[in-house]
Image (cartoon, rainbow, N blue to C red):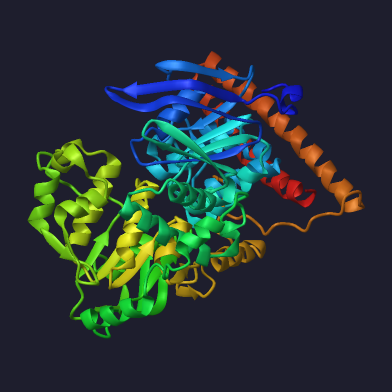
Length: 606
């Protein structure tokens, strides 16, 4: 760790880059870049996919060496890096990977550790092998392990992937509470606004620094563009619409900028709202009629878990709906139910006669690896029309979504994960659906592409239903938020995501939360005991219980070690092995009971 006298000093950055350059092949990703990060500073990094955001992190942390220039780090600086992949050992258990093998009574004594585990590992059995975890579970384990270690600088590359809205809000609050400096690459603009004090934009080999989070970055960038009389008309129009929405959003979005924003405000004075809601609904009604999707008295279960119980929900023409809920609440299953891919157990799902529905799932489509981008798109539709009758060619649409130059004729098999996602979305939009279901559409998309998608949806007249952990995107493209709260219903939330988080917090406060960590002894967990007042007779008695249980656990551990040694010394004595095995089983049962007693007592004295 950095010595305390250095942490308290304003003189040195934790990391400095001085005239650093880095190229891959003939493409320069960093060109003569100089910057630094100071103690406790929180920086968000934005930029298009492939422009060098991850390369910047790897050069700063020493994973990659620069081609030119100098990188200096404060002596003793401790850096924690969450990569887009993970470094978990497949043969380890989750307990070993995240908690260093500590037993429940050891890690649960620390309130911070308990909170991290309960928030990020809800539903993950601690003694489960890492090798059997899903990609999302591995990601959350890696993030939890990093947060449970002490670092001077935390570096996070897309940390909100695989987190639900509630977990993203918790992560933001947790990072703000830490003394560590932070560098985070993310496409989650709400998260950038909530956490970051500075924004770095990586583009064309350069890194531009802006004061504030995402809203401040948009405003400052528009101001710079205005002063420089930028000639990119289409990009400017996108920026103006984005600004208009930001300025019409919650006041907190623009409370952070410390620079003059008068000129930026002047830029958007005459800009209408991003979309004409009434006009879109009128046009959607003409295309769809009155009936779109009716869910009537539906029951739906997945395994033993009831997702919907006598649920009724009417989705009308032009509705723009966001769906939220914790991971596992059934959001993806609900979209599959609406699309008809998943039949209800009881009840019915009725589709209007004129709907043309498309469903963007989280899985990437299978494509012909030898196919080419432009011919594949033109085979679907060469020209599409917008709400105002404007015709857009397939080439123009591809360019909007970042396929320019040689990428227009690239082999589909050579596309990156982000490019595959953009291509999948574009193919779906070109079929001109009038009902659109999007399941986590922001995964693998950079902020520039998200702006383009939002701009397209602003003029798209149809019924839109979105499941997303990206709070900014939900608020930007939808008009109402509905939630799966675990009661078998789809509930409308008039105040949107804020109301969802409040209701989840209230539910957890009265013992109705779902963020329970799955451990082998979770079968019959009693309700949390009443907290004892510090210094009271009850408090003293409870602490004596803790001391007694800890001594008993130490005795059991010593006895288990003796028995294991005895077994190793007598591997050919099968009668002895059987007797010792029975004794170990009895000790394990006693240990489970003591650990539960310890947990209950520790909660009572917190």
